Amino acid sequence: FGVIYPNNAETRHIINVQLRHAADMCDDANVRYNVETHNVSNNDVCNTILKSAKDLDANLITIMREEQETDFTASRNMRQILSTCAMPLLIIPNRNAFSVGR
Image (cartoon, rainbow, N blue to C red; front, side):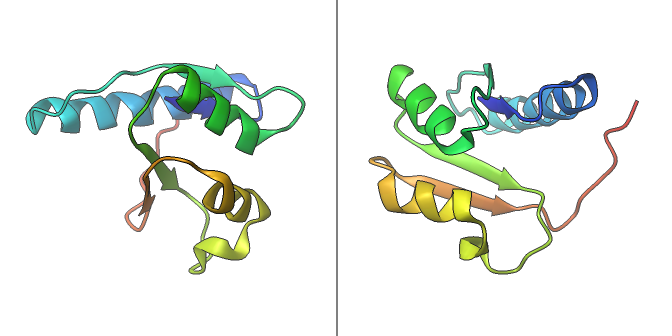
């Protein structure tokens, strides 16, 4: 699923493009998946991710990062997810960022 934060048209567009790209890669690799988007409520990205994954009975959380930091744990949100996630977590750094603008 894609987490939309902040909730605006540009962010929704970027997340939807990335989800379509991820779905295409899953289709090519014959991997089962489910695509959904979730709006972040109360500026709580971590709880939105963890609650949505639990509600979907997900068996893996995959996070594609766009941040430029090389240390994944530099983000407070990511430290919270790492310390409280009850399922496997796959973090994919976006080293080859591409424009998804309109």
